[in-house]
Amino acid sequence: MPPRLADRREIAVLKQVSRRLLPFLFLLYIVAYLDRINVGFAFLQMRTQLGFTDEVYGLGAGLFFAGYFLFQLPSNLILIRVGARRWIAGLMVVWGLVSASMIFVRTPHGFYLLRFLLGAAEAGFFPGMVLYLKSWFPAKARARAMAWFMTAGPISGVVGGPVSGALLGMRHIGLQGWQWLFIMEGAPAIMLGGVVLLYLTERPSLAAWLEAGDRAWLVEVLESESRHNAAQGRARFSAGFRSGTIWLLVLVYFGLNMCAYGMMLWLPSVIQSLAGFSNFEIGVLTAIPNLAAAIMMVLVGRHSDRSGERRWHIALSAFGGAFGLVLTAYTHSPIPVLVGTSLAIGGAFCMDGPFWALPTSLLSGAAAAAGVAVINSLGNLGGFFGPATLGWVRSHTGGFRGGLLVIAAALSVSGCIALLVRTHGAGRE
Image 1 (tube, rainbow, N blue to C red):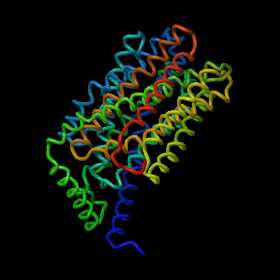
Image 2 (image 1 turned 135 degrees about the vertical axis):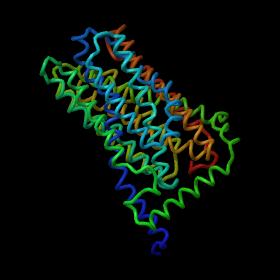
Image 3 (image 1 turned 30 degrees about the vertical axis):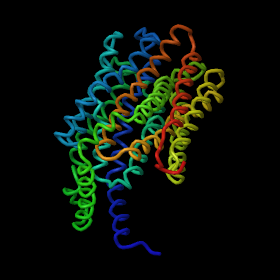
Image 4 (image 1 turned 90 degrees about the horizontal axis):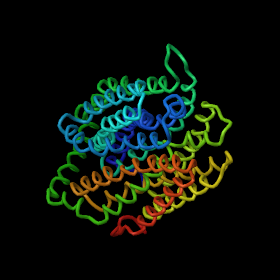
C-alpha cells in the first residue's frame, strides 16, 4: 500500500530537518572529539621535550573526565536557562581557547589543570546536542539521528590521525609540532562557535527554512510529545535514580568508556612502540582502527535496530573488544596490532548504539531523563580510569600488556553485566 499523506509529510519534513542539521552537528562533534583525544599525538613529542612520563600523561589525559563529571550538572542547568544553541556556541569558544592554551604547558601540574578545564568546558556539549536533537526530532526518529551523530567519535580518529601526525612535523616561529597541533586543532572550535549562532535555529517554530505547513506539523508533534511526558508527573523522576537496572547500565557504560578512551588516547603510543614509523605514518595507521570502528558501529547498530535485540549486541561487542585488547597485549607485529586495536575500539563503539536504546526503552519521561543523566555522568568516569591505568602500568612495567589486560577484564565484565539487564519486553530477546 502507498504511504498515507501524513506519513509522506513526516518523511519529507524529517528528511529536510536531517539534511539541514545533522551534517553540521556531525562536524561539531568531530571537532569536540578531536580536541579531547589529540593529546595522544602531542604526547609523542611532549614525552621527550617536556620530560613527561607515561604516568603523568595517563593521569592528565584522564583528568579531562574529572572536569567533565564535576561540571556536567552545572553546565546542564545553565543550558536549560539560556538555550542549547547559545550555550553550545559559548562552550565551543571556551574549549577551543583552552585547547589552544595547551601550547603554554611546561609542567605536569599545568598539563593536569588544562586537561581538567577542557573537560569542564566540554561537559555541557553532548547533553546540549541531545537536548537540541530532542527539540527537532520526534521520539521515533530520534534514535536514528543520534546514531548518525555519534559516529563522529571514530570518524574524528580517521580525520584527525593523519592531520595530527602531519602537524607534529611543523616547526615555525619558535613553536614545536605539538604546539602547532593544539593551535590548529583548537582554532576550528573557536570559529565554529560563531557559526553555530548564525546557522543553527533554536527551535522549529523559528525555522524560516521550513514551509509554514511543515513547520506547524513538526511543532504540533513535538509539543504533543512534550505534553505527554509532562503529564507523567514529577514523581516518576526519582525512578531513574531508584532503578537497579540504571545502575547496572552505569557499570556497563563505565567499562565501555574505559576501553574507548583508554585506547583512543594511547593508540598513537601503542603504534609508536612498534618502532620504525614516522609521526605522519603513525597518524595514518591510527586511522585504520577508527575507520574499522565506524563501519562496525553502523553495521551493529543497524542490525540491532532491525532485530529489536539489545543485550546480546552489547555483550558480544564487549567480548569482541576484550579479545582485541588481549590480542594487542600479546603481539608486537603491526598487522596483528592493527587488527587487535580495531577490534578493541570497534567493540567499544559498537556497544554505543544498542546501549543507549536501553534506558529510554526501560524508562519514560522524566525518569528516562534522570536515568540517562546518571549513566552519562558516572559512566564517563571510565574515561578517567582507562588512560590513567594504561599510563600507570606502563610507567611501572615498561609495556602496555598489563594495562590492556586490565581494560579487557573490565570490558568483559561490562558484557556480562549487560546480559543481566532485564528488558521487561523492550525489544525481542
